[in-house]
Length: 399
Ligand code: ADP
Ligand code: MG
Image (cartoon, rainbow, N blue to C red; front, side):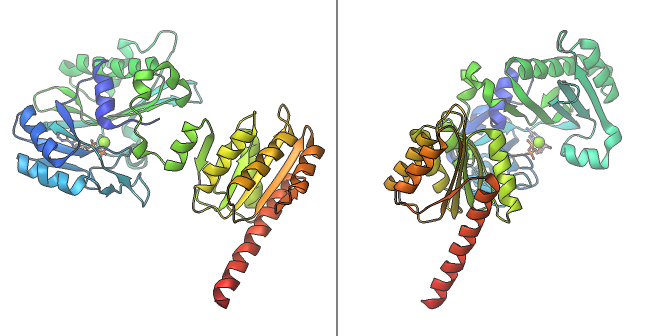
């Protein structure tokens, strides 16, 4: 789960990471009012979306009056901000963060990630802050400093000092760097984050080490341990298909194709997507409905897949081990009787009670296309989809 910049700054502040004074606003009026509350002469208005690259995309404005803040906000609120990380459809701006502007002397990149090779938390830092890490590694790879943390002892001060010196930070500021690095590390481990990124971490003209941006991502599977973090979820920033799935306990990832997949087991779901592609089709989603594919879950899965307007054919692929094919078949029949599905539906069942399952599908009188192997299922769904498309074209041509 991702959170907003202002939320990440608040979380990190409780671990001793310093950022400029700022306040959240939900409207231009409120933003202007917040700047007066904050005081000072210059402020930065920042669109709160779950994506980086806002500065270059017009999502960050430096303002020197409350009317300038109002004007900047008029443009931001309700708009879709398109940055290189959002995709062409952009992300809606419903909150802005008003922050005191600081005088920047130096910008540093700082990131904490999980390094799968060393199985440790890795610190990635660079003296070239402000640029994205991808750019830095392409253009200035020699500026990147890496360090891994031994989990049994945590991040030691000497390691932080080493990083600070490698970045060329003045000796007088090293203590502030140590506090920032250790604060991030503690936030990362104590809150089960998978990523903490401060870009830029700046050294101000008056020698303060300050986080000007902050990004945190958390491990969804550990959110139950951190209710104060799960409360920070902002559904307006998520793919609506994915948040609907998450609310229903389904494991779903939206894709761009048009063949909807309803599968039990993550491995089988991946194999199903591959096989659809092999057969010449494009999957619309990854969906693992889990082991207990009860009729109720099958129904939820159908509704979810159908809510994606791109879907033009559906493949149900269930391997029943603990589950029972007759149950799943009942679920499918029940759903197809309840909701109108005007597209081809291919069902492949295998495993426990498969014969009973097939009988239920056949006896239903519904136009379900059945398949026995995965290859056959993928070929049939792609074929049915192609026929359907061709028919649609013929009908349009005839009318
Ligand atoms: P993004 O990474 O999404 O572009 P940032 O929060 O990093 O957004 O802001 C972009 C740039 O704006 C920063 O690199 C920094 O130069 C400038 N900036 C951001 N916040 C402030 C601030 N409070 N004071 C001065 N400059 C700022
Ligand atoms: Mg940034």
